[in-house]
Image (cartoon, rainbow, N blue to C red; front, side, top):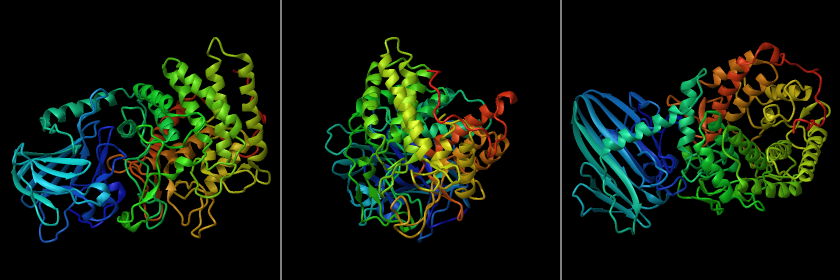
Length: 635
């Protein structure tokens, strides 16, 4: 058994109920949990600090300052988010099964975390160390014995209360509660933690843990059974789909990640709060689930979009409940993960202009209808109103998909996604029997104007490659999406040149891909930040897809095979990967990375199954270019 004072990001397991989430270390400590919602203040925040900032550990007891050891084995139970960890000790073997009860759309019960301790062999001394610190580790709660049972411990810090059930815990003067107990083979001890509003008169009562366990396992298993993918790497695809599902709030929003401020560069300033709903990321996540045969999430997401988005002010990011207030703050009392400061809550990107968001929304709304959702008059009205706004805005510089904190620019990817918006909107409207022909002709004209603009201004005339922004020379990995978005075909020489240049200049020898060039010195980076970052994981999957699009299918498959080795032992991915120290970086688990893995597996299956006569030949520079403006004959 190994011990460690610091756990890697990818060492953590995810618990979730689609409303809130927690992270569990291999030593049995929950060091991050936000209750009752994804964007609630964390009650355990030692992930971004020290044990003093809150954790709850259940595992073999240790004394005299000895570090707890990692579990010898761990896995999710079947296709679920029920985690089981096992420790082999000198005195026997013990397991801890952790889960959050299954969600229901109609009944949002108080969030609860169960921890079931089971003796497997011998006689093992177990400890529960409970150190809640609400308010992101800033507050020591008031502890008291509950009048509803001597073994119930109540930790209160207005406006929250936390009810701990299980063996009786004793609190010391430092606000640390501990229970020590022994389990023998076959013995079971149940602990649970329930959140409730501090001022609510009704006391949350514990339920039967094993009834909840069976129902939770069955709920996840039934959902996973609805995934229709049967190709290679199905286990990785289904596990990734479960992770995405865990971030799908019943109200329709899809959270980007359950954490804040896990660094993109250890010790650096690239630390952001991802516990919110980005229309872009959520649209891409829903599109992935649709390709897997899951429609319910798309239906709820479409309602969320229509309820939330004001077409005159399309924000890049919203709270889970649709609120638009995401003022960014710095928590100075937290030192950050491995001293990576600052720790931020909220997200200033909410005030940015990101033109690509329009395109991702329209693309997924079209896919949702293709998958079987009925047309929505509300959705049509929203898209038409967004079209009016985008027509006025697409010529403006913006902060782009990467949410730069530097000066706005005319990002080529943003303009391409503006084209995608009008292209997909036209495709949707031609299905409506009463579509306004004059309006359709106008939308086509705008679409074609954007296409011409991109092909004129987004190209480096010397190299014949698409550039990150108009008039620039740097590359951007987001341009790998050009053929998959059908902006240009994979055999276009500009596409081939761009893919090969990105592979040559932004990719590492292992095939990982940086988003764009970065330097250590502030003022030299397009994003306005100092320092470098890890390779952005979605970009590596985009490269695999792009290689297949330009006909290099075997090379694409080889790259994907390597990328499928990157997820943790539990199948989880963060936002980035450090090629030098070989560790995951950024918020975790991240929906963007996870959906990119699934999409690449699906794309690879299509590429391999495509008949040879229908597959583009392996392409190199010199292929015949596509026309500057795509024909609209198909619509």
